[in-house]
Amino acid sequence: MRGGNSTEFYDDEGTLPKSQMLANLHPDVAKVVFKFNRWHHHVDYSKFKNNRLIKVVETTNLQKINNYGLTLETA
Image (cartoon, rainbow, N blue to C red):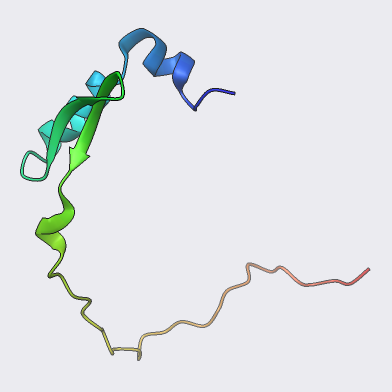
């Protein structure tokens, strides 16, 4: 079985348009490379290695769980 969207996209256009779109949207971290006999995008994630999570402590606005009227029934 082949990968998803093969017949819809990649059989006609190849992988270059997809890779080029990502490189155009994020030129600071993405570039187009040719490897494994086709075009790919390569993303350099090292720019983000020093990012840290910021914990948000505010929990006063929590809403009650809404089960949308669903109930659990056992058989």
